[in-house]
Length: 199
Image (cartoon, rainbow, N blue to C red; front, top):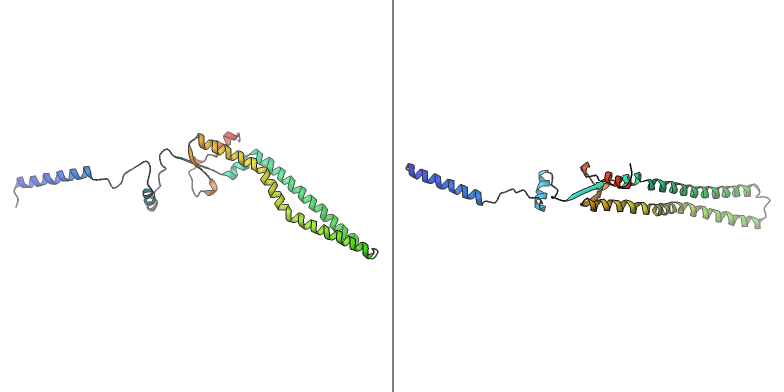
């Protein structure tokens, strides 16, 4: 059995060694303002929230909702609807003329000479081709008209969003449609509405 002084000396050595080790040892977990890729990956594996790097701001807005609130969009939609109605009306008028032509020829078939009937047949074929062309081009024409009317509206919305982004120090502004989850405090739609004078 060791003497008491020897035991005390041994205890002092162990304590000193422990203190030195604690001062020089690198901590297993450190907290930094900017997490590394490894830190983020580990946090995701553990199911914890990855902190946003200090000083970096993110935002989002629902672009479709913004467009629906803009008075320019409502005015454009009215013009597009009117344009579509004109297309439909022109088609309906030609269809009516075509149907009347057919009925007239059927009622007078026995009285019309073959040469004249052939002429009417060509007119009917031309009307049928015109009807098909109008029907095929209607959607395309309406889409082009909508694109033309919406171009300045989209440009305005884009400009305002970029202005707010720069003025408020946002590094990214996402469309809400691309987000699976976002804190509502990051929604910049109120700022955009205020800038555009939308209530």
